[in-house]
Length: 338
Image (cartoon, rainbow, N blue to C red):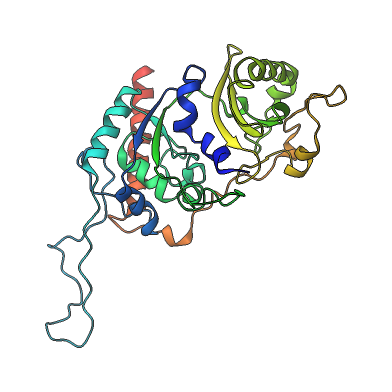
């Protein structure tokens, strides 16, 4: 794999050409100070100071009115607790992101150059990647190992590696669609400009509807690749993700590299390398989870032990409070409709 192949899969690079085929997205070039904030401090709850306090999840700060049970007098040999470091602040970036979120309907899915923080969904009050403000984005980004790979090891699989990271990082804000069905998202594998494999993207669940619509979906994706992707994307070997709508239209979700950090899901890279595309004897296969006994393990969703700080004012305490508020609002809305 070459660096140029990895670079083509950055969303800010492919989006302009495929804008009409994919989800509406707004981009923000991230300052280096924000990148340093993402990688330097391992505590995800150390959130930036917000200029829009009504949107922010409060940080745990020291209240000067509260007295410690034990205080060290001046001149004591015991080491005094160091003063709390100043919270980072990115006011201009936050204002720009807030405006973009409003333009996109109030809710977005955040993504870095290559990856979305799917492995950090457990930390969100909604248990998904829906964000409505800057602090929710920061919390997801600082909790994601997938994004850490983008930030520090993006070119590790490249034969011509000259750097560990791109020159610039971009925050992609993708319009949030609550009605999207995970069973209708698929990963497609392209080798030597031939579509050699398709599989279900969400492999942790059995969806009976896919058993009945398997041939239809495969045909739709084949046609989409031939008409919209094959002659437009410049790499010969790559993967791309698509979504099939209820109107039987195919929407482009993302491009990813062939091998490297891309998951083959229901295939292995070894068997994909052996498939000869385009021949009469090589029938394109769409792989799905055929039964409940065939589901595969997904991303790690367990909560790290060190993050369980339930004390009043902690980051986790704020997550719980926000989830409770959201639950109450939803119930109130249901009562009003009834």
